[in-house]
Amino acid sequence: MNTDTCNIDEIKGLIPHRYPFLLIDKVIDIVKNQSATGIKNVTVNEPYFTGHFPSSPVVPGVLQIESMAQTAAVLVAKSLNISDTTALVLLTTIDKAKFRKPVVPGDVMLLSISVQKMRNKLWKFKGEVIVDSQRVSECEFSAMMGV
Image (tube, rainbow, N blue to C red; front, side, top):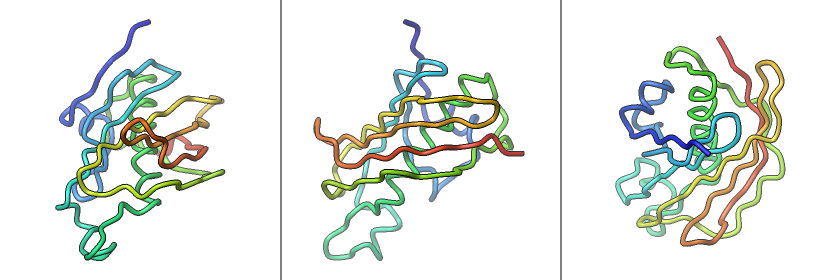
């Protein structure tokens, strides 16, 4: 099975997100139309930690989902051979979201994404965030190719 990898510069060539909202550092094990794994190194310098929560920093659940969605967007771009940062992949649904354990500075989030269904411009995914071999959050989500 052929797999591919994207470093941060390649990611910036595939999706429009930029600091402070680019929430993935690398994507590995890309299998077009099937799966990919994003990597996010969580540091104490993340801008949201100043308010969430200053004395006990925790990665917000919605940003864990956004990290999964950005990994999925890279997978879609690689699957469709799109290298146009104006081509948007927009979330349409989020289902069955569960958060089991806090993600904190120093953690490395592995964002495991698998394609559940593709039809026209609509893609359905299952995503998991794994830290130290433990699933800390998960959800199912859909995204559509935008304009």
